[in-house]
Image 1 (cartoon, rainbow, N blue to C red):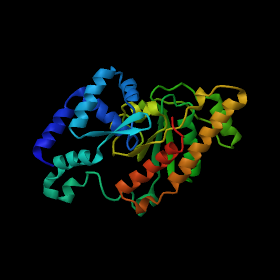
Image 2: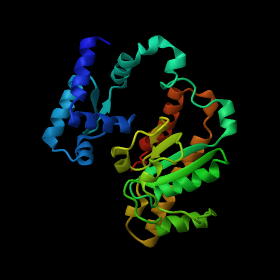
Image 3: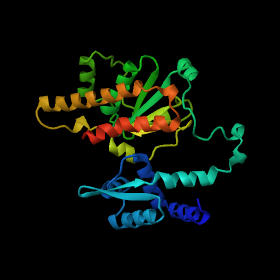
Image 4: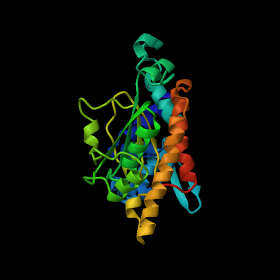
Length: 284
């Protein structure tokens, strides 16, 4: 990358508002985000957001695309990658013994898969239904290869009764199941994470801590069954639909040949699991 282009891009990101927009869009990748959703998530006035988007687009950091009547913004990953390369390309003159901590290469070797379980965290806002269901499903379908956790950015305090009843009817053990705050997974003594999945759009938009070990992450948005309205049967159907959608995603996830995939390939596969559902109309 040309030095002047890099300076321009870094200067654009040097503003707190523009950086927040860029990071929010990066958290939603590979999916795009509407301006109204960005403004709501970051509590920005529409005219202020328009200036930020214009500056980021002018610097080549983001791009806009029209889908029907809506405009979606996404990060230009090629330009973002060029910026990262610009920063680290000369790292230690390429000595692998010193630069081994930089991301890349195979994620999980066969021997690593055999000697330990992989820790997976599911995040939603209230940690009462979707993320709780995902935690229980992965601990069962993972067959000892995965250890699942769940947490909320604003936890409800207890799992939703309908989620508990659904899991019990399906034969799952719900003893000890509880609603947890995200902070339980941020401090010393927290389990090192290999994967982090957000399962609602609001949680995906909120800023999370830089997890130690740089776990792979993806957004698997599912409609909130707690917001379901109508008769008892219609509300129960909302929970059953969320359960089935999450079960399909987790079944696809546990079937991934992790030892055969490098970091980029594995990231694409877990993104695809969420994207396929979103394109089918399953989103938060």
